Image (tube, rainbow, N blue to C red; front, top):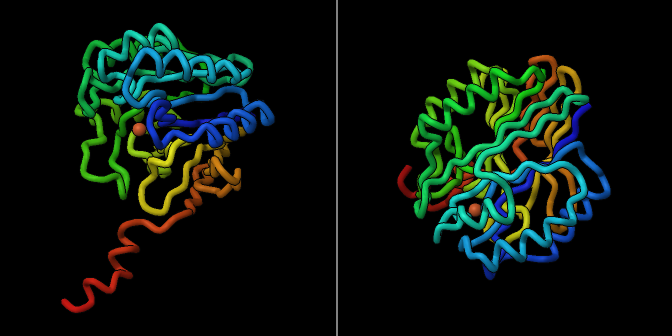
Length: 270
Ligand SMILES: [Fe+2]
C-alpha cells in the first residue's frame, strides 16, 4: 500500500493565502504520515525572494519525503532562481523502493508567462529517467495540465506540448499524473492512467463553489483511490476509485454544465 498527499497552489504572499489552512494541511500530513507528499507548484504568489524564504521555513514542518515542482507564479520575476535555492531543483525524482513507486517531477512554466511547455530537452531527460526506473508504479508531477478541466476559466492551462506528454504517459504506463494550476479538483481517466488535478490547498483562490482542498491518494495492488480533503474542515469526499480496471468516478461538485442546464437565464430562449 502506498499513500500520498497531493497539495498545490499555496500562493504564499497573496492576500488570499490563509495560514490557518496551511497549518491544517501540515497537521493532517504529520498525523497521517503518508509515504510521500507532492506539491504541484505555486508555492509563492509573486516569485519573490522573501516569499520563498518564508514559505520554505514553513515547509520544514513536513516530516515525510517530498517532491516539489515549480508553478507559473513561482517562475515570474525570475523566481526560478529562488525556487532552486529554497524549495527544490527545477526537475527531480523520488523513488520509494520498498513501495515500488517512482515519482518524476518536471518544470512546466516558461519564464514570466502563464503558459506551460515541457520542451524537447526535458522530454529527453524524462525518457532517460523512466527508462532507468524499475518501479511498478510510475507517477508524473507537474504544474500545468495535460488535458483541460471544466470551470478552469479563460487562461491557457494546458501544455503547449501536451500531446507529447500524453504520449509519454501512454508509452511508459504512468499510473497517475498530478497537476495543479487552475485550482480545480478533478480527475480524468486516460486509458489505464488517472489524470488528477488539485485545488488550491491554502488560499481562497477557488473557482465557483469549490473549497480549498488537497488530494489523499492510496494505491494498493490494482486499486487506486483518491479523496478530496477540505483544507478547513478536513472532511473527505471520494473523487475516484479504480479497482482492477473498473472505475468509479464521483462528481463531488456542481460543474459549469450543470449550471448552464439549471440556469433560468437561458429558459426564455427555448
Ligand atoms: Fe495557482
